[in-house]
Each structure stands twice: as structure tokens, then as C-alpha cells.
Image (cartoon, rainbow, N blue to C red; front, side, top):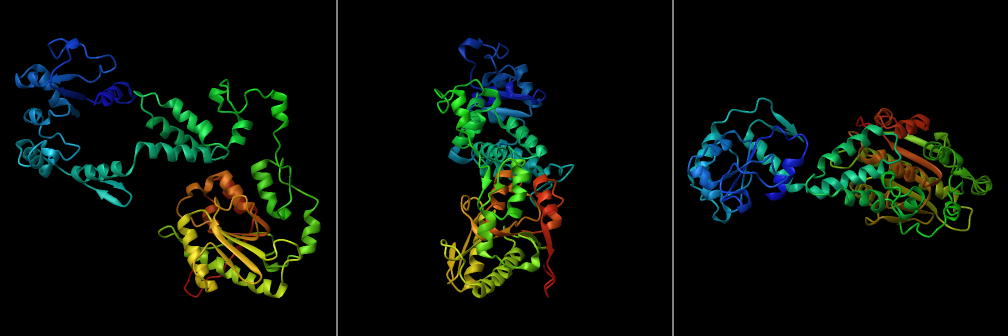
Length: 455
């Protein structure tokens, strides 16, 4: 409780919270009475002794007005007769014989809780509607048991890192505010959090290029120590030219993520494409196509998008059979990547491809002329394929699709043709500029309704 008392005394926004601590006796430095000065940093939490409670001292009245009562370990049985009966105990105190189940305090508390009026306003959270204090307390305790402080800090730091180059400023502002709220005042963890943000999450190359944070720019780094600034600057090279993608596929990433300063088309692309003679799906009219699917995500899976993915794949297998092997040295098969952003969607794609191709479920499938790989965008980073089918999956929330780096990887894996499969109306008005622009500048193909009324 010592740390909790320090935090309550230092945290902002808790000035009006009435807190009292019950102790067996005051430390010798306090003197014999409850009114003596408490330790530095705990002034906002008055202390009441068991002796003062037993003698009916005026300080005992603090308990009647307190919103929080902190009882030191081992004192609950002695303090229970003096506690207000409408104080809720935050854990099961009948364990380890702290209090017996028929203790008078627990009886009074149960009687009070049973007669307490319902909440003035129901609390709704994740499908639950809570109308009384007891259910709300249990709901909060379950949430706290399932979520650690470290986990809550970690996912916010990770999301903040993913959005560091995003134009989605409002989301970054909310993440930063949430992180600041979670940081304790009594324990100085800010330097450790800054280490994770500035050094732990970025790659070594990014740390070298961007430094270790604007707030700590003067801090020396072993990565840079001893390298003259002129030589260090000469070692930073970005990929000015790309040799992988058809120009219309590279165009979006070049403009949106590199401001036209990288991914310029190499002069080898035209000759390579002429020799390969890519003629798949001329009816789609473009190398980057958005297939508009009115699907729905259920339990992490959007099956309508997987259906469309298999339809395109079926057309491609027929085309490859007629076209024959690619006119190049390696790879000797046509390569297809069925990608998504989430693991549950990947599993569903893998199972559907196994049924479609009459093979056992796996992440890689082969026919005589085609190799098909399915996986998440993150796992496919650094790889490429002739044809990429990208399932967006989400229809109710953006999730981490607003990460510029992740989106950049997803849209730059295709050599010859890219199909983005998703709900164009949803992403075209999702308030994430990169996604809205992707819908706007990509050839849109609305799919006809199926006999079951689904797209």
C-alpha cells in the first residue's frame, strides 16, 4: 500500500478523492497521535490507527466520509467492526481465513448491496449492460484480471510506432494521451518507456537515420559514436529506383509514402514486361484493381472476400494453363500470394485453398505451373509474387490497417498485378487518408450479386 499511497498523493485529477489509511500504529517518527505529520509525499492520505478507532477518536470520522479505505495487511479482521457497511471489498477476503464467511461485517455489506438501488444510468461495455453496482464491480475485476499494466502500455507504444509516419494525427494524439495517463507518478518509468519507444521499436537503420528521439537528441549512441557526421550521411542510401513492380502498381506507394523521392521505375521494367507478355484479366483494365465486396467480418473472418479470392485464383489457374510457364529463368512457375492482415483470416484462407486445390492445409501450394503462398502481410515482408490478392477483411473498424508501413508493404509485393479485395465504400470514407486515397485512385470493379444476395 505504500506505493499506492504515494501514487494517490502525486497523481493529477485525484484531489477530490477522499482516501483514508488504517494502520496498527503510527511509526515512531510520527509521534503518538494520528494528527501528527505523515511521511513526505503522502500528505493527501490521512492515517487512522486501530487504537484511535477503538477509542472513538475524532479521526475515526474520516472513515465515514472516505471513498477509499486502505487497510494494511493483517488488520482487516481487527478493523472490520469499525468500517462503514457500505464499503465494497475489492477481493474475496474469506480466503486464507482473513474473515469468516459469517462475519458480521460481510453480513452487513451483503444486506446493503442487496438493497442498493440500481445505477442511475446503465453501463454498456462490449455487449454487456450493467445495471447495478455488484455486476459492475465484477465486470471491472474481470477486466483488470485479464489486462496487465505492461500489456496496456505495450500495445499503445506499438500502435504509436506503427502510426509514426501516418497522417492520422487524431489517433496518435489519443494514443499519446492514453500512455501519459497510464504512467505512474510515484515510480519514474518515463526513461524506460522512452528507451522502448526510441530504441527498442525502430530498426537499427531507422535509429541511425532518424536518431533516438527529438527529446533526447543530445544523448550519445554507440551506433553513431566515432563516425564523423559527413561519413555517416554518405552511408544513408534509399532505394531511388525499383526493379520489381509494374509502374502502375508502384505509383501509389511512390506518391503516398515517399513523396516521389523513391521507388522510381527502373529502365529494365519495360523490357522485362515485354518478354513476359502478361495478359491476365484484360477485362479489369488495370494492374491495380479494387474488387468491391460487400462482405462482413465475423469472429475474425470475412468469408465473402475469400470467395472472391478463390474466384480470381480459378481464373488465373486457367490462364496459366493456356499461357504456359513464364518466359524467364527463375522462378519457373507463376507466383501468387494470397495475403491478409490478420492471423484468423490467414487460417481461413489456408483452409479454403486446401479445399479448392484438393490438398492438405498449408501455407504453400503448388501446381504444375503455379505456386501459391498464403500468409499475413507482416510475414510476407521482403518477398514478392507475380499476382497478389490482398484481403482487407475489416468492415466495422480500421484496426491497424492505418499503419503506413504495413500498408506500404502490402501494396508493393506484386510484380505484375495487384487485387485489393474489400468493402470500397467503407474504406473510402474511413477517415484514414492513405486508405481513402487508395480507394480513390485504384480501378474499382463492383462485383455482381451472387444468387444468395452476397457480393
